[in-house]
Structure formats: structure tokens, C-alpha cells
Amino acid sequence: MEGAGVRLKRVFGFGETSDYDPFLLLDNFGSDNPADYSKGFPWHPHRGIETITYVLRGDVEHQDSLGNKGVIGPGDVQWMTAGSGIIHQEMPRGDQEGSMWGFQLWANLPAAHKMMDPRYRDVKSNDIPEVSTDGGVKIKIIAGTVAGKRGPAKDVIIDPEYLDVIVPARSEFVHPTSLGYTVFAFVFLGTAHFDEDKKTLVARDQLVLFDDGDRIIVTAEDEPVRFLLISGKPIREPVAWYGPIVMNTQEELRIAFEEFQNGTFIKHGQP
Image (cartoon, rainbow, N blue to C red; front, side):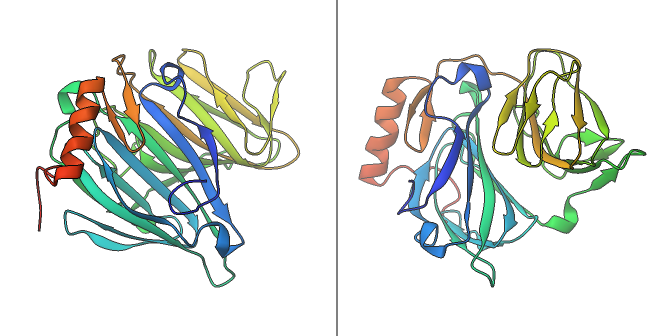
């Protein structure tokens, strides 16, 4: 239960962060019951991270201390770099059937960029390129480059790749990965093998964290599989984390919350 009363599934987060570095948290939120999400996430601060929200069903209304406001709907992405500090709210609104579904990923910022100017990007679905392979695999490119097409989320500190991949039944997907990067996949529809030896079948709502290597191989069996494939360059710095603020030291955390209480939290871009 998060926000003002939103039920969600936390895929990882609020524990040991080193395995997923530079990522901190992945939430799978959604329900067909508006009571599970309609109270939303009222005004709250962030500092030291980036939050990436990807919507599959329903809408999310948002507003922040930089003066941004709007709605992201099915297929849209909100990529927010909190940097030195931002205060925002996110209020999920289901579709006509009352259904809501999406993901929120938190990416850490290195110490040298913790206090960078905040920035905000609304990415509409029709601005996200999609490529198809000869084998029928479909890939939406939110960040990164596939088959010469680059996703709209560019100039991000951790050099992320964020793909929404659909592999048809009885098909294979082979994808290059960067050595030394953290790579994981979260399955949200279907089942597939994510190991070359096909010894382990991964099902819906399961996450695969890959060892270091230069490629991944995904093999679907008798049904299609759809998953998020995410990677990024590890930061390898100390993490001091409390609630919505992630810094490098406990003293930096103390200062952040003290500034939030005394009204000096926002450093840039006030309307």
C-alpha cells in the first residue's frame, strides 16, 4: 500500500540495492477496482532520482512544482528527473471500465548529478518507435537503440535501455547487452525461457535478473510472452534512502527533509 492508499505489487525495492544498481525500485500498479488506486499519490517530494512511469491502461493525471501538468494515457511515458528537488502528485484514473495498469521504475542518480536541475518529459505513445523482427517480435523503444531506431528518452545519466517486448509463441528473441551493465526483465503476460539452456520457465509477474554478458536469449513456448527489458550502467556509490528521497549520506538525507519542512527544498524552476 503506497501513496494515499494505492494497492500495488513491488517487484523490487526498499531493500538491498546493489543487485539492481542503478535501479532502486519497480512497481507494478493496477486493478479493475477503482478503490485500489483512485486515492492516488498526493503531493510529495523527490530528490536524487529519476522516476519513469509507463501506462498500459487508464490515465494518470499529474502536476508538479515546476508548473507542469497533464495526463498520460495508454502507451505514454512520464520520465521525471527529480535532481535537486521536485514536488509532484500523480492521480491514477481508470478507463471507462474502471481498469488501471502501469509501471513505475526508479533510477538512481550519481552523486555528481544528485543536485542537477530537475527536468520533466512527457512522452506520448505515438512518439515511441516500434520495430518488428523477421520472426514477428515487436519491440517498443522507450530508451535505447534497436535496429537503428532510438527511443525518445535521451541524454539520461545512467545510459538506460527500456524496452517493451512481445515475443510470439514458439519464437526466439536474441538481443545484445552491454558488458558490465545491470540487465533485468519483468514478465507481465505469458511465459517463456530466459536462459539459453531452456531449463527455467519464467511466468507472469516474475522478474529475471541476468548475469553479466553480451546478449540475452528469450524463447516463447505455446503462448506469446510480453515483458519489460531494462538495463543501465551501475553507479556503485553509497545509497542513503528514506521514502521518496535518495542521497549518498545520512547527513544529505537530513538536510533534504529539513529543507522540505522549512520551505527551501525547491532550488530551481519555481513558476
